[in-house]
Image (cartoon, rainbow, N blue to C red; front, side, top):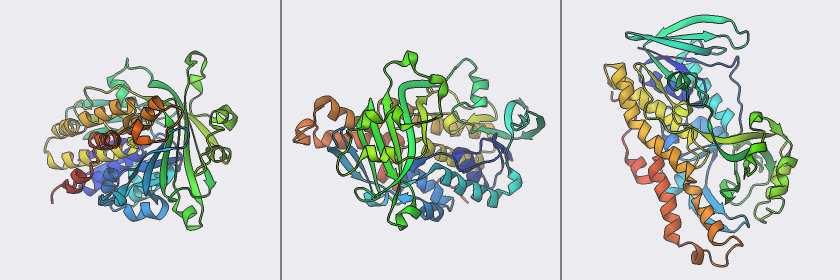
Length: 420
């Protein structure tokens, strides 16, 4: 069997590695001329780290990323609402990693090149369409750098890991339109600074209309006593009619939003200083797409953001793409009929990921901050007079169940490696 994977991002490369481990030949086609370590920070939750560990990559992650110690929620006054241990400290068998997205992608890319061979990772191949005939799928490409039409490639299965603007998804859903904008804008960057709290803390402060998220992502900086802080400043834009929606992913000056966070100096963390310390700030919309009722069509299916793009709430986007890759490899390895394998993959993965999309629209575990804002907008003297401890715990645990990283269930689940 030969599987064509469209997209050389985190989901596509993790899928290629999973297929290779399962004894299935795969080729990855990436549209950009050169795969480079782009992006800012990302969190790998224990359920995804388990899969990367079973792919033999935990040591590489630990060499460059941070094993997250705890997650802290605070209100916009800096008062802590909820704190919980994460990863190994919470009793999981696997850590949670905070890491630069580009560093993670390079770890996956180097492993894929070593295990599949350089000739199986093909860049500058932009998918223009595909055909299915009998038991084969033929993918058509052009060279993005020149616009030249390239030779078509035929395989037994095509997996679309080509992101939120997926060509394959658009083929099956041509009237879907643009991604759905939440009305919130994210400004993302990294800043070198002093460690805060435990030095391995992930902090979320604010509420659903204004939020600041930060966490360290560099083991190299930590070894030198510093912290490379990945941060996200988020604001809801109320005047959406005049907002420059066409300018997504542009770089901006901090003056665009810094004034809204100028008084967010909590003592234990100084948000204005972190924002000012960034050299380059990127602007992104907070978007997703509506859940689909079907991913698989014959020998073609969707994976990762092509299947279930979600708001960056709960740190689940890339984690779920990695799990998709492991599950699809398991089913392709254990079914004689590839079409049946894709149907089994979809049946296992589409319902839970659709639930995560909707849970994230409902603010996911970040609900604890919104409760504090609604019930005590001016702050509180006694948190538990505002929100009961069992309410806080229930929100956290419910999201873990929805997202698939309940500790006991994850620790006890059988491996997704195909049986030998």
